[in-house]
Length: 148
Image (cartoon, rainbow, N blue to C red; front, side, top):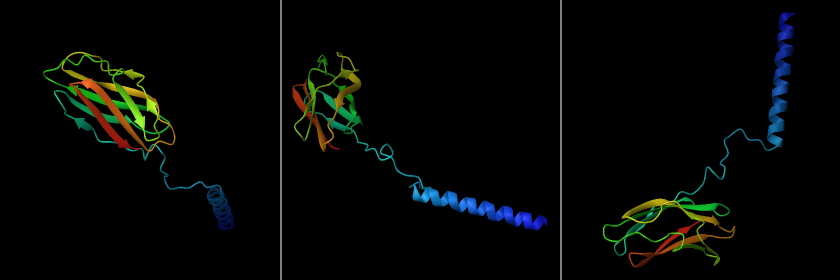
């Protein structure tokens, strides 16, 4: 009698398991990990422009369509005062001809070493590339480009 009950319990559990697996497959639930957009977010190496007397290094922290754009920017010099407001001398353009002006710069002004985040509004959905232009430091226009 105990063996009969045990066999019935095993059959019922196996049937329930098969039903659950079948429903998951039909509803599109997959047991393997799926990549999300965050998991495949592009990373960009730093770009450096050493024209004139000022070295400028730019590293995109967030550079995706539909998201606020954030760059880590570092200025280094030993001969020129870094007294420009980066918000006033920077712009971002995309391959669609859209121009974006910075909303903030956290690095301040003055001295021979500056570092901070330069933040721009969201890039439009159709953009395939972006170009950051920085002017007024060491007498050179700096241009940094990325494919999105």
